[in-house]
Image 1 (cartoon, helix red, strand yellow):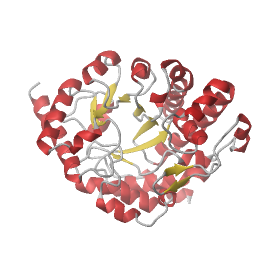
Image 2 (spheres, rainbow, N blue to C red; image 1 turned 180 degrees about the horizontal axis):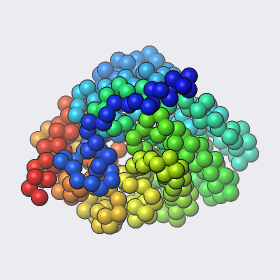
Image 3 (cartoon, rainbow, N blue to C red; image 1 turned 90 degrees about the vertical axis):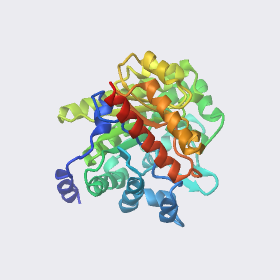
Image 4 (tube, rainbow, N blue to C red; image 1 turned 60 degrees about the vertical axis):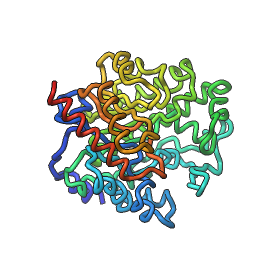
Length: 368
């Protein structure tokens, strides 16, 4: 019940390690914080065990299951943040689309959007509490169970990334069906992107109300757009989300750092660093020093080790991390991979990555 949920929210455990939040705001820290995208994932045997034989989206709808999966990596590694276990495609589901997780194929929409008239199938006004309340309940439960160890990150997919899934009907290499809309139906594309933006804003605010202490917006498909299309169909919505969420939170006297991760959008770095997000997440194809230069100290940076570097021997991982830290510097920096962990990665190597970030950064900060 709502009363119950509200009572749970009012006395969250005291946060013990706020390094991640301080780094997001560009404040001084004693070490560089580190977490991994997909840290709650199939590379962990206990994750595979918990998920065995269960429908993926059913797991997403179980607050207890999401909480357990979110906490698993924290039991193994001294990460500085947790990210709630969920999926970006819960938003299209909330808008009335059917999405299934097909083994060996990934997320699949049996009836994708084909033409602009298909937009009429979507719910215009989404009651996020009703449709996505299970995510909020997972966040509240997890905030309690983390016991203040580290902050909890909430997240969403960005409008263009979600739009591309809704039209492609799943993953794609070319995204040509979705991009066809941008060129043939620009007005309908903007209508859909606006609809998505409205739901996302409410969804993120609901996550903060439920206990999320930071928010990440995943524009995973940014890289398939050219600079002009990015400026037209992605960036304005990313900006709008941050601005609207921040304005609403300000009214409530709240301030939650927001991270934008636009994968492969090199050309967008300057723009992204002026889009109201505190942190810009980077994929592994960007040079740390040039990212610092191009963002001009306006934002904190997050990333950007090549996930495949985790296949290297542990000593090599340590060297790669040291170089990365030297490139970014230790202030206003959150260490992460440039994309999510892959299922066949060794947990020990993830541990080596986390340890290297903490060790090298402590030394570097001491020597300053």
